Image (tube, rainbow, N blue to C red):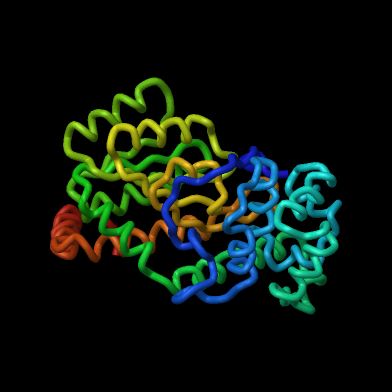
Length: 306
């Protein structure tokens, strides 16, 4: 039932192949159920409702081969006939044929102990699976390295995150400011956000980093479109390659959120943000010197309890 979850997923995507963009199964990418699902959807023009179904299937890749059309419809928040039309759009005779295909090409590995977990343990296990999936996606580090170069080169570097994603943007900005000379946090919406983006562009910014999590605020999509029109390269960390921000992102890095509790859990997006920060540091030649300088000042001020 997540209070920060849901919303339709728009059709189309302007994002370049990121960690899970482009053909999902290929050189340098580990073959997983989620990757095979991504490959299945490639090349099909899906409606917003169908992309929402695809989004839900990728997030629950291990479970999908065992779901009925009614269960998948409930998971995606759509009607059962929509699931049938989705299967036909992918080239199958109906949903039973699609599910048969999924069982053949993306078998799920179900734990014998899973049924004995209580709801809190199940939420933790789901997050562990999200982290495992993220590790598999990072087997090809090139999209992440490209993102790191783009962010390191942008002076200043605006970092956007609204509502559920505000804490992700704040956490990244807090640490990035220790190694990057000019990080500008944009974690409050409103009429001034475009002004702040224009100011960053005038100051020399070339890229913007966005954290986007469900439920996706319309203002985030509009702001990213404005940033692109202003000439910024948009790098986005989102919960899925099918998120509505994909069409207004130049490079999208996906990390799934947990949906088993009343409010979504975002361990994987948080970790991906830290990994992205590491990639950015690799392209900041004075990053280590800045950290050492900060440590020296902190010691002189007695800032931390040792």
